[in-house]
Image 1 (cartoon, one colour):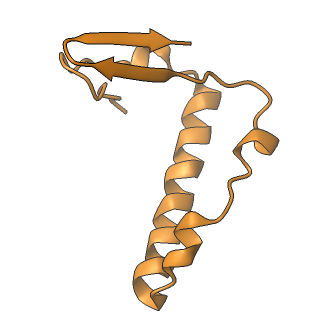
Image 2 (spheres, one colour; image 1 turned 90 degrees about the vertical axis):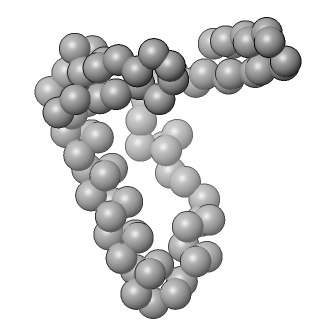
Image 3 (cartoon, rainbow, N blue to C red; image 1 turned 120 degrees about the horizontal axis):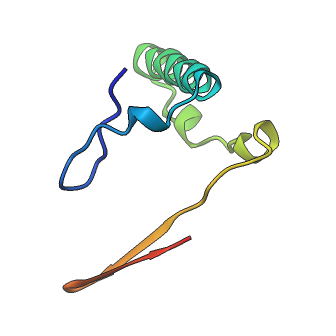
Length: 77
């Protein structure tokens, strides 16, 4: 499964993905698809804005804050 970075230049970053990470991503994509079907089918847009359990489900994560001002861009980890 190629994972294309969203910034220029676009690159395939799938070499960083372990089998566990791949399973987590597939589960989240499936959950998003199911949520999308409910939102579109039943017009329940409030479901899209429910609080997330992300910080309860995962013990380790990386948070990136990307700040851009004019021609200068900074990455804060």
